[in-house]
Structure formats: structure tokens, C-alpha cells
Image 1 (cartoon, rainbow, N blue to C red):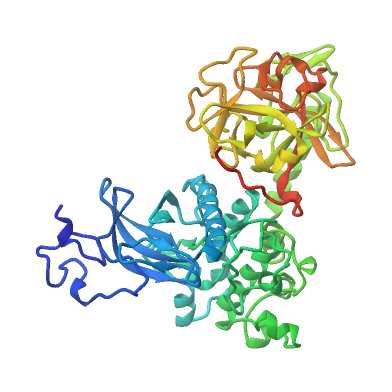
Image 2: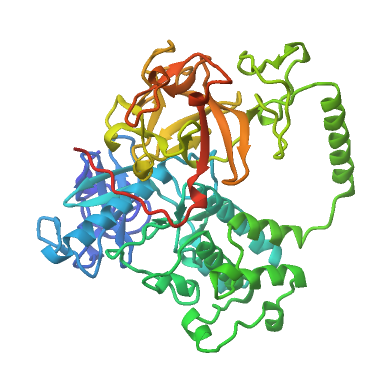
Length: 557
């Protein structure tokens, strides 16, 4: 391929350097980008070739690009903080000394959110643009995404406002994408009709995570961004309490626009007394219950709104759909079978699978999933979980506290993310350096993966399943049996509302401090399963529930 003949608009090779592109009709000579943009045909990261700019904002510039290795068109987002960034002739980005910390903090968050989004495959979420790569170059950072060709939701609504059912169909994958993102403690903060694209197959996808942030991470160096008519007051306040409810507001405002063709009154105007006109008063055909759900999501004060996207979406749908009597009948039959199963002594396993009754023995139970016998009799606690039963967990970010000493947490030694860095017990104050993601990459058999949240490294035992082996983090999986973990229920802490679990390796061993030691800094190793050994038990604290905790920057030493 002769890269000098590349069309800046479609990234296809033309017949000649000059003239119109026979594929799309674009003429390179007529294109002139903004002064702060990189020029077309700029190479990046040794394999990407830039085309024209697709758009820019206060936080960055998005370019069309060609992956010269795979010969596919992609979109590349460049971190470029318009208020403080300067572009030199050689394309390097610079900022003044007084703005250096601000820029570096925003670059760190920019790449951190890319790492989270890169974990989502198309199978995981159909409603979010797929991140393919991210890297640093020219003193700034870049995110490589799939290139989506379509029209924005705003362009579609400008043509004609949507019916309620049409709006709901478009917004369903968007809401589910946000639910998934929120599990990783990340909020989008820019849900608008301009950032939702409709593809040719009418599928909707959420774009532009340039201002996404980790919940509780707002700092003095944040670059603030908000969209009039779509952003709530807390998003533009220096000490605003940002959370899932912030995205709930923007999502509801986007729905409002879809239905009415008009933006809601801006939050500042509403604070001065202006009210949001109900969609039905503008002639929109919508049930009173569905309208009430949208209006509640648009409440000014965060505590008056739905606190999660799940609550909003479930309420919106439960209020607009009639009950399916056949479904209720089937659910009733399932409930009866489940009750009978309990009386017959059949134990339900992870993911709703039924274990073989022959594994039931006097004095304990044996999990058919793990083959490990519990020393406890079958006990049911207030949460409805059997002691010794593999349990499902919410995918997301967790901190594991040791049951023997709740001030000690499972962490990555020294907060580093290098291949082979061991897991250790650390003082609880280091918890923000040592979050773990529970992922479902290979969960078909009831087991999950653990990742170090800040490094995207798998937690495993490097081709070994022997008792006594130090548990470490590695950038790639080495053995399907060693990086898979299952959570076996031990009990519940009502005061902290946390489940106590034993973390079982697919090979049959569990995570525990080395030699049973509970000294801060001790390594975590694989040990033989023992239900009575307190040091093997961990409390799973879902970090997304603690919005007051601040992240600590993790640096390589």
C-alpha cells in the first residue's frame, strides 16, 4: 500500500496522490485541520496512520486512522486539554510548569479509564465503543477505538422525535453499558445525544469517555466539563458529590430529548426557579408511571434521584410493561421445585446449577463444583446462602479483608504492577493501591478471574498448582486452572453487610497467608482447604459502595 495515496476521509488507497477519491469522493487538497490538530499521515505508535479529524472538545481530539498492520480503520482519541495544552511544530504536546501536575493527573485518569474499557469485549457489552489499544506518545496519551460509522442520536431526533418504545430500544444497550461501567467504579459524565451513535443496523453505542472518572476521585487538578441541559449541578460544583446518580440524570435528560425534541431546562436555570416541563404536557404519548420515573431521575438533588442505573432502568421498564401471566406461572413452578429441592437435600450450586445429591455426606457437604468437603453441617444464614456453597458475586471491584484481622487486606506488594509481583497481606490503609477486579472471562463453570485493578494483571500461580506456591500477578494467563477462582460462602457480617468467603482455586487450593501468619506484609500462598481455618477466610468489600474513599496514585518504583 502506498501511504502517500491514502484518502484522509476513508483511509483507502487512491489511484493517485492528488485528486478526488474514487471510493468516497473526498479531495485531500481541500482539507485543512485546526491549528492544534496533528496533520493527516502522521504516524503513531509505529503502526497507526492518522487521517482527518473527526471532532474535538475541551479534553481531546479524535482522528480517523488506519491500523497499517491489520489494514482496518480505527478512531484514535488524543488527550489534549484545550485550556492548557500547546502543540509544537513537531507535534509534541507541552504545558506550562504550573499546569504540569494538572495535565499528568488527567493523563493518568485518561489511561486508567481506557484500561477499564479495554476489558469489555463485544460479548460483554453491545452498548459501548470497543477500546482496542492505548499508549503514550508525543508527551500525551492516546486511546484506539473501533471506528463507528453512523448518525448521532441528536441527528436522528432532529429528523423526528422518537416514540417511547423507540427511545427505550435505543437506550437499552446504553443503560446496560453504564451499569457495567459503574460496576468498575467508573462514571461516564458525558451521556448526551451527541455521544450516542446509531449504526446502520440501528444498534446504539455510547462514545467519548474522555471525561469519565473514578467515583470519589475528584481532585483539585480535575478539568471540569458539563453539557447544558444534560449535566446536574453536582457535576459543575468543585465539591460536587459525583456518582452513578450523575449518569442517571444525564441519561434521563437524553431520554427527555429523544421524546420531546427539546433539552430540559439547564440545572443552573432550574436552581433559579425554572421548572422542567413534563413530556406529556408537550404532547408526548407516555404512561404516567414511565413519565414519573424519568422525572424522578431528573431531580435536582442527588439523594432524590435513583441512586443506580439498575434502579432507574428496572423501574422504567416495570412501570411500562404488563405482567406476563405465563411467565408468572413458570416462575411459580420453579419456586415450588426449589422448595422441594431444599427438603430433599439437593444443594444448588453456582450459577443455578444443581449438584449431585450423592455428594451429600453426614457431618458436612461436598461441593460438586470443587470436590472439597466442608467441615460445617448444612447451615443457612439470614442471607439465604448455605455455608460451604459456591456463591455468585457481582462483577466489579473488591477489597478482600482477612477475617482473622479486619485491618489487613489482600494486596499487591508495594503497589507495583510488574509481572510476577506477589500478593501480600498489607495494612488496610494501603487498600486503595490494591483493589481487585472480579471478572467473568471464563466463568462458564462457576469460576471467575481476579485482576489487579490498577494493572489489568491476572492473579494466578504461574504454571503451578502446588500448596505453598506464592500467588502472584501476571500480565497474561499461564494456565486455565491457576487463574480461575471460586467464592465459597462461609458466613455474613450483618454489621458491615459483607459476605465472608473462602477463595478456592480451580485446581483445588485456597488463598491464605503464608504459614497461616497474619503479620502485615506476609505473602499470600495456596494452601489446603480448611473451613475452620480463620486465616483462609476473607470478607469481600465491594468498593463501589464506599464513595468517600479516595484513590491513591500507584507508581512504579
